[in-house]
Length: 310
Image 1 (cartoon, helix red, strand yellow):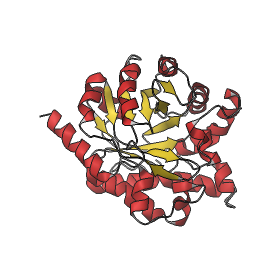
Image 2 (cartoon, rainbow, N blue to C red):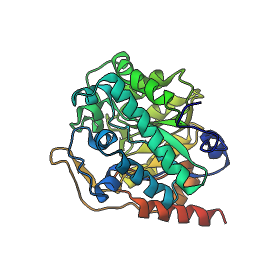
Image 3 (cartoon, rainbow, N blue to C red):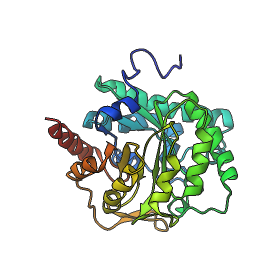
C-alpha cells in the first residue's frame, strides 16, 4: 500500500459515495493562506515552490483549512510540473518526489482532525506552467493531443501517490478539458472537472452547456462545475452544470480581480457564505472557495452546511 495511505488514514467512503449522500465541504485558497503565514509566492512556481523550499508551510496551510471544517484538501500541485521544476534545476525524479509529497502533506493535515476527509490532487491547466496569466485565457495554440501529452506524465505521478480524487481545475476551455480527461483515463482515480468562467462562457468564450456536456457518460468524473471565478458567475453556472446529471462542484474566488501584469488582486470581495444554500438547491454537492477565500470563510460555510442539515 502507498506510504501516504494507511488503514488509519483512508476515508471510510469514496468521495463519490459521499456526494451521493449530501454536501461535502472543500477548502479555500491555498496561496492566500500561505501568504497569511508569511510565505513569498512571487516565484513563477507560485505555491509549488514551497514543496521544495518549505513543505512544512504547505502542511500548516492544509491544517488550517482542515481545522476550519474542510473535508476535502486540494494539494499544492496546481502549478507543479516537470517543466517548471526543470527550470529550477530539479530533475524528473526530484519533481516526481515533490508532487507525491504534495499528496502526503494534505493527507497528514487531514488526519490531524480525526474526521473523515479526502485528498484531491490538483492538476492545473497548461497556462499555469507558463506563469503569465494565460490559464485565464486558454487557446494556447496547442492541439488536444499536445495538451494530453503535457498533462499525462504528472497525472500519472499524482495518481501513483494515492489521492482520493484528482481535481482537473481552473480549466479555461473545452480543448484542454478534453485533453485532461484523456490524460487521466485508465489511472484508476476518480476526478472532478471544473472550469474557470466569465459570465455564461468558459474563459475561452465557449458556452458552458457545451463545456459541461463533455463529461456525459464519463464514469470517472464524479463532479463537474466551476472554480476560480467571480461568485456571481458561479451562481449562474451551477444550474447549467447540474443539467449533466452529475454532482456539481463550485468553489469561486473572493470576487476580487487578478491583475496578471501587476501580479496582485484588485477590487473588493463579494464571496458570501450564505450563497451555499442557493448552490445546494441548484445541485451543488462539493462546495468551497478558491483564491482569497480563507479559513474563516470556510468555517462560515461549515456552519451554514451544519445548520442546513438540522
